[in-house]
Length: 307
Length: 156
Image 1 (cartoon, rainbow over the protein chains, first blue to last red):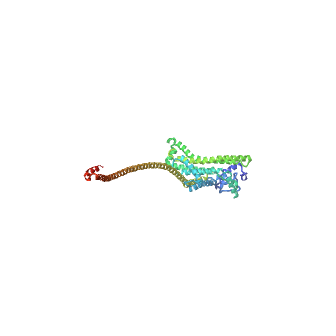
Image 2 (cartoon, chains in turn red, cyan; image 1 turned 120 degrees about the vertical axis):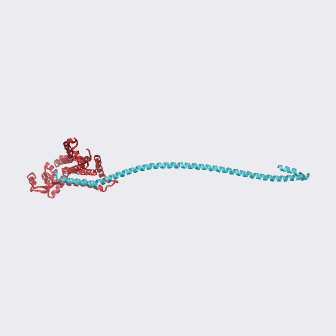
Image 3 (cartoon, chains in turn red, cyan; image 1 turned 180 degrees about the vertical axis):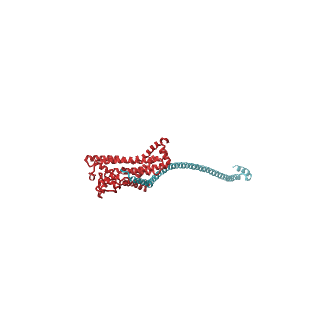
C-alpha cells in the first residue's frame, strides 16, 4: 500500500477501505454542493457514474448499486452452487469420490441441524439452510484474504486505465455491507410471514400477535411485545452478521495500519494479523452457522401452531 | 454503508440461489444419500439372513448325518441278522442232508448186509448140504434127513 497510498492519512485509509464501489446517478446539484467540500475536483462530474468518494456515494441515495458487493456475492454464491451442482450431477449411491464426500459431509451437517430444530414438513427449509450456510461462509471467508490485496490489484488495474487510484473503492467482503445481510434477513423474514399466514391463517397469525401473552384485555401490550419480537428477528439476524464481519474487517484494517513503519511494528502487525486471522476462522464459520440455525428456528416457529 | 438498490439485488440473488439449490442441488444428493442408506440396510439384512441360513444349513447337515448314521447302523444290524439267518439255515440244511445221507447209507448197508446174509445163507446151506452129503454119503441117505437139515439151516 505504501507506494499508492502514502499520501493517505490513517483515517483516510480506513475510510477508503470502508467505502463500497458504488455505481449510480449523481444529481448535478448534489455534485455542485460537494464541490465546495473537501473533495473538490478539478472539473464537476455528475450523472450516471461510479462514486468518487463516500459523500458522493451517499448523495446518490437509494438508486445506486454497490457493484463490489453484488459482484463478489454472486461469484461466491455461484461458486458454491456450481460445486454442489457438479456433485449432484455425478452423484452416486455407491462409493463417493472426494468431492461428493465433502458435499455429503456438508449436507449431512445441514440436514442434521434442520432435523434437530425444524419439526414441520417443508422441502424448502433444508436447501435454504444449505444455501445460507455455504454462501455466508464463503462471503465471510473473503475476510481472510489480506485486506489490501484485491483492492490494491483492482486500483492498479484502474490506474492503468487512467483512473485516479485514490477514488477507486473496493470492498471484497460482501457481508460487511449491510445491504447483503439485510437482503438475506428480509428474505427470511418474508418467508416467516408467508409460512405463518399459510400455516395458521391470517386470523391465527394476527391472534398470535395480539392475544399473547396477556390475553385479549392486554391487546395493546401484546401487540407491542409480539411486534417487537417479530421485527427484531430480521434486524438481529442482519445486524449480528454485519456487526461481526464489519468489526473483524475493521480490526484487519487497523492491523494493516501497523505496516510500513519500523521493523518492530511490521513484525507486531504480522503476528497480530496471523492471530486474528486464526481467530477469525472461528468467527466466520460460527456466524454462518448462527445465521443458518436461526433461520431454521424462525421458520420452525412460523410452522408451529402454538409457540 | 448506504442502504440502496444493492439490497434488492442481493434479495433477488439470494432467492435465485435458494431456488436453484432447492431444485437442482438438494434433491439429487439427498436422494443418493437415502439410496445408499437403503443399500447398506439391505446389505446388512442380507448378511444377517446369510448367517441364519448358514446356521440352518449346518443344523440340517448335522441332522442328515445323524440320520445317515442311524440308517447305516440299521442296515448293518439287518445284514448281520440276515447273515446269521443264512448260517442257521445252512446249518439246518446241512444237518438234514447229513441225516439223509446217513439214513441212505444205513439203508444201503442194511440192504448189503441182508444180501450178504442171504448169500451166506445160501452158501452155508450148500456147504452144509455138501458137508452133510459127504458125511451122509458115508452113512445116511440124504433124503431121510432133509427135514432136520432144513431146520438147522433156518436158524442161521
